[in-house]
Image (cartoon, rainbow, N blue to C red):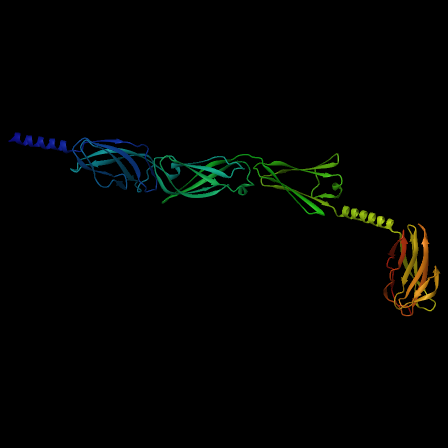
Length: 456
């Protein structure tokens, strides 16, 4: 009887040995990470080989808040299957660094094996790294690199990049050990006054309930850039505006050069006196110099006033025209008027006419008309009129032929019993003559008298 019991016990033990979980578990990945404070699971890849009978196997652990796969996995006898084990970290204890924990694989008969895994639990800021290329003042873009240093997949992570040169936002997915590059457009006007050197680019990171901030130095490389703008406007008063702009990021010397000819320089003025003035032949060279900080401008206004030379030239031309016209005039008439005191208290004026021949002329006749409301005194000075047209009130003198340079003068007195106030104008005197058989006519200037008060 004892032998029967012993055989039964040995049979049960042998059956348990045959039915017990017999697996070979190989870990495929390495350095799996969990982000402290983040409920996202860490992913462990296992290669499980069933050395026993076909069975359904379940996975569980007391380390994490949850595990996947949650259902049992069927593995045939002798089969190898790759299992992706996802374990969510616990939030009820503060563990960081490399943490070793146990997990269990259980068969359908409740037999199980225990295995060990290592997870790297770190803060979000320690899982990522930011780097930047140098920024050139002439470049229109910047390249910022965000690197995932751990074996963890960051999904729907908000990234806000900030520096003195730009602000940039994006939402990304960052695979394990992936490096992502952000190519950011730059507005050069926004850093026109920033000097060369090292600055900081920071990244605000947000993924679900966890936030972090990381930073890195960014080099603003030295560049000396001096640009020039010239504007010219105006005709009579010509203005030239010269502007130097330091578009680089280091202090730089700026020089403004300008040349004027020896005539225009006489009428040219400057908003600021030049540092150097040099004469070279028919030109005068000017130079201004100033050290400019980044973003600083230096402006010089140069004005050339051509009004005075234009007036001088105009007067010269007018004089030349008048001289030429005068030199070509065959006969010249000049008429003058002056006030005289009459014994009877009448308003009286002496009218004098001068006749001058520039060239030999023939059959010279002079005509002068009396103004309204006046009478002529009977005495005439010089040549007596040949006739008087009472209807038209016109005197006529006949002078005959005049040689070149010959002059004739005659005068008469007009009076009025009615007083005159203001401007009293006399008509022009006309003359007709012949020159080389051709009839011609000239007139005198207009003569007038300004009376200040009425005569009594």
